[in-house]
Amino acid sequence: MSLVNIVSALGDNSSIYPLIVRDCGIENLAKCVMTYKQNAKESKFIARQATRERIIDEYGTSAVWLGGIPLMQFLVDKFIDYKGLCSKVDFRLFKESSCQGINVNIGRFKNLAKNAVFDLQKVKNNKKMFQNLQVLKFFATTAIPIAVMGFLLPKLNFLYTRKKMKKTNFKKNTMPNFKSNSLEKFILSAKKKQDNMNEINFCGMEKIANMSALNKMVILDSGLTVGRIKTARNKNEKAEMAFKMIGMCFLNYVAPKKIEKLLNKFTKFIFGINTSLDVKTLSDKNFLSEIKNNLLKLPEGIDGKTIIDFIDNNPSSAFVEQIKKLKLVTFLENNIRDPRKFVETDKINSFKNAVNEFIKDASGFGSIEKYAKKALVAKSFNTIANVAISSFLLAIMLPKLQFLFRKLITGSNLDPGIAENKEK
Image (cartoon, rainbow, N blue to C red; front, side, top):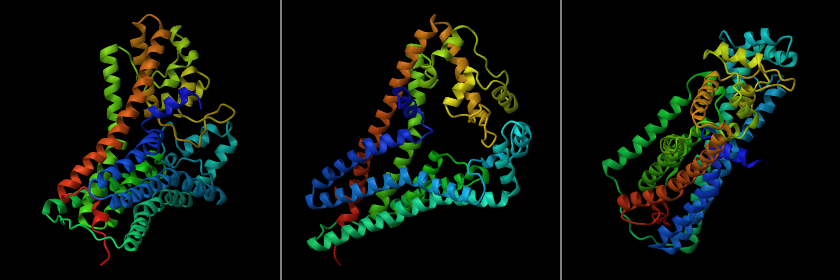
């Protein structure tokens, strides 16, 4: 994988790649170290138990979180293919429009992509079965991982800790059991927040069937939050877990996009450099050459039909080549658009607008190539800075806030679940 592709992947906050870097590369290790230091202020024994629990929890969860969706999706797709239907068909095509849909695509590509049209026809004739299989895929890629990491993993982890504590005959220091109404309200509001997130994500069959890996991870974290709160060993641990998980969801899925916008605005305001395009586009010499020579063809309208007609009529144009690279459209080997795939014309329109803005800003600079190089450097810096800032917030600031919250509700530095876990 080239350096450009790596930076491009890290800069795409709608994908899972920045999450992998933050979660596995930085956050988990930092949290394990900080867990030991925090508990060791009062008890090195509890510090060892809490750190072991954190290692199992963080890395076990990461394994299920990052591997569970692709594995289950692969298995269900194989089952769909085994049932004689094509797993590549996008369920959103059942919602017909003037520019795309099952019937529209069958008619449009019947002489251009016969094998793909055959797949569409078969799915069309077995819509109910295909719909049920898509629902199966959704639940397999969310419910099973949630059950494993939200309920099974913590219970096994706590059971192992309890056995270790019994062997050492550990006696706890007395800790307050915080039972104020504010704690009850905090836990209830946390659960309600996650229930609302689940309701939002379970709206519409076509959305359920074709959710991105990132959206499914949002649901996983929602389910994980509910599971961790329910399986926590006491009210103090429930409150701390709710605080931690809500903070983690915000810093994983909301904060990076806001940081990206702020960095892009800052770069534009201070340096006059437009960083809205992906590094893959900024480093494409053919694309830049067409801009320089005023040869770049773009869709003239913003409606779906205009966008799709442009793609089908100009499959080898520089603009279409870019949206192929950015995976906004899929083509078959014969350079015909894959009729089984849904074209997200709104995202293509956003890219077109970003290209127009870049051309406008670059035209006042003089040299397109030099402006693109500056933009490439700035975009790469912003991407790395975003990962660094997000990682710092997740790996350092969130645990510190979590420990302050713990001290506030318990009056102790010790892990509330372990400190109150003694042999009855």
